[in-house]
Length: 342
Image 1 (cartoon, rainbow, N blue to C red):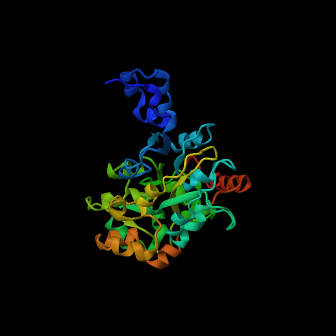
Image 2 (spheres, rainbow, N blue to C red; image 1 turned 90 degrees about the horizontal axis):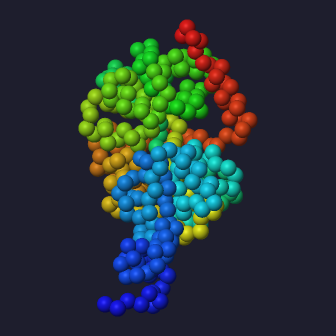
Image 3 (cartoon, rainbow, N blue to C red; image 1 turned 30 degrees about the vertical axis):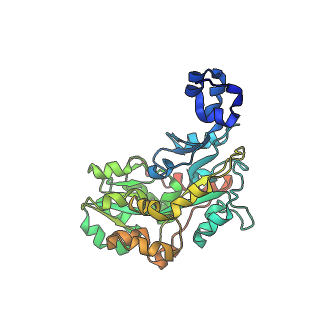
């Protein structure tokens, strides 16, 4: 077959790619445009559901990175990804002006009212939304083979100070989250720090599963699949509420690609939404939408995925701190450090 390169549009050339171009005699340097022509979604491995990012539309590619810090660094590059996935803590730590307005009002209108502050990164109400907060998760207490503490679940976060958990408890890496659990009283903070075997979000679950720890404070999301198959595990979500962590998609200021709105909406409906719930990802949809979906789960799991309205209303987010507030918080945390003698 005779092929005339000049009859191909640039878009068609990019679609064919380097391999096809070489097969028909297209100059190889045109193939080098292929990677740059594809919009990129960057995120830390494990922070985005696989079925979702594998369904990215044509012209998009997923770019999983090892750490959230690498995602944030990529967002600040001169040629940033079109979209990035981060938690609210990492997104809020970005330099001012790094995120551009999301520009998806109809998508955000589908979310519950409680998601609106998160879409603004907890800025003033007049601030344009910059994030699609597609999932949220409360921090909870995971217990392994401790039915005695499960029965005392009404004590809430006070369970963390039980003497039997001394050096058997894994706490969050973030001092701010730890302080949110028991307050800023120096004596309680010091007592909590004495309990800790480790401060480890990443491997805390493994420490519990291996038996090295009996309890951990972790986001609920990671625990839901395990609760359905490991009878040794139980979760306590205190009736007093819990700090929340949000998963978000944001547009770096330098990104020019249009949003894949249909793909974004898939996480809020249909088979994908059901798949996400089974994996512990809970989009912040109105209660009337989530209720019939979580009703298919065993009652204990359903109550965690969609807590009673009063419990959910008592949960709280952790807005970004300015430099002075962050320094003051760190000082209070340091002052509560246990002495070397314990």
